[in-house]
Image (cartoon, rainbow, N blue to C red):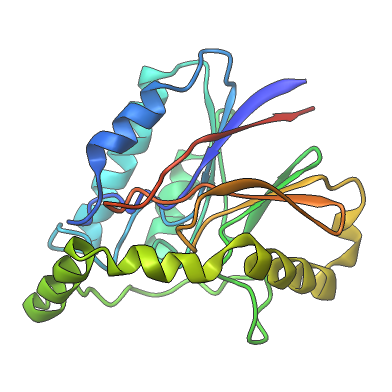
Length: 231
């Protein structure tokens, strides 16, 4: 069995992201980790401090390449989320594809583990299909919105919102959506790892499957890299 780790919702290049915590979390990964799943919203095009999508993409490619240089024995699996699902970013990710790097707009299955961001759940959405955006509407350029978001983060309002998406609510919604669109995926499935809700927890069992959420790198929200095993 091979060792892997998963992390999500880093929201790189956004003002409210705790980059120091991201660095510490990644540096703490043991050397026996052979696969790292980046499980959605790794970049944040909506709130990026870079002035254009092109600049954000260049910074994102640089971040991935640097990580692969620092950890030469690590393979990366990148999954898109709702903040990093543009056509241009998909083209950049395709340019990175290699024996050590793969990506998917929706999900990745490794052995008995399923990884998905979690935003493609409910309201008729298909968790196995994502329409990429031509471009993300950039909110960071709107000073009033950016200031308001800063104030909410400082007041930790976002931490209360994340509590509304705990395992007892999120696990049934994910299970129902997956079973509706691809029921066969539950054959041999033991663990589901997702992000999006910024609510960190692990080992919540629902209908025989364990659910895990890796939290987020937004300030005042727990972030965890969870380990898993796969064939």
